[in-house]
Image 1: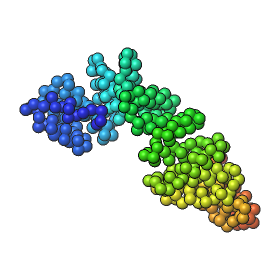
Image 2: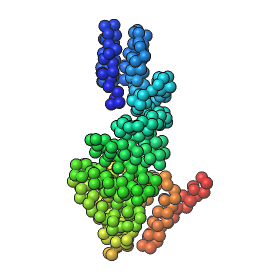
Image 3: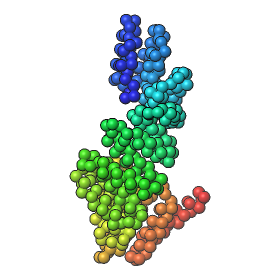
Amino acid sequence: MDVFNLDENIKEHRNEANKEDLDVIVEEFKRSHFTNVLSKTKVFWEKHETDVSLERILSILDATCHSQIGENKRAADIIKNMYQNSGEKSIDDLILYGNLAFMCDYKLARKIMSDAVKQIEKEEAPNPMQAAQAYLVLGEAEENLEKYVRAIKYYKQGLTYFQKENEPDNQMILFLHFKLGALHSLINETDEAIEDLQKTIELAGESHSEIKINSLVSIAKMYGSKNEYEKAFIYLEEAIPMLENSTLANKLVHAEAYTEMAYNYFEQSRLDEAIPYYEKAIAIHRKLPPYSARELGMIYMQYAYCMEHKEQPDKVIAGRNYENALEQLEKSNDADVLESALADIIAFFESTGNAKKKRFYENKFVKLTNEKAHTQ
């Protein structure tokens, strides 16, 4: 529990009568035996006299333990009670309660941290670290509540305070730029996202290769979505060699980089150049434990199209991969995408004179459209 030094806080409350019981509680908590802690604090409340300060410590322990074992409502009730009944609350108190609430109730964390930042901003010389911590938790709470515009606002305010520190936390500043880039991208603020991710790349240097690679691929995808393919290529050409020699090799971001490179060529009708990247993307996707059937199905469709229409077409491989695409898309439960794919596959087998397969997929198409009609 980083926000609360248990040993330091409990030391002054030890006495001959309670020392043994308190030591057991602390040890069990350090070992993450949370259910044991709850049973032992319950006995402690009944067995020993407690003052307000010790009651607060035990309540913090109880709230943390309830949260850790998934009893979020009980944890939130304890934190809310401390927050509402503790009289005049210092900024440190509010930050502590807000951090505790973040473990179990994002709305409660938002409420408490909002109080904290109100107090912080009233001060003539706000403590940058207090402010940075409070805004960071507010941003994370809003992000988890899917209030992305607010999350961006708070992360930016937190970033400002982190940068004001005499010895800035460069790792946190790097993380916040990356986080802001991802959130701007999520709400389609592409220019802002690119700006933050470019700053992330600068700060990452050579020592944070994973975050740098992710930023390079993300920027490439955004430039691709804007049809700015040459800019996308610049970032992909830097990212792909780094990926092949990193801990991210054969992970999702590696597949995404290959897919993006393939798609950029595909969109420019440079089909022969797209093919090897589609093949590499497919190979990685197939090995990923939980892969997206819809994503893989769409990759197969584009790959099959490339094989059908490249400079020297290979209709056999094209047909096989159209069928691979359908196999994946049938798992995706996206009827509209499946319907569109079936229409393309029927057209392909008609163009190659394969009447048997054409009829087979026409029957699937009719069945799908009938099912859609019944569900509407």
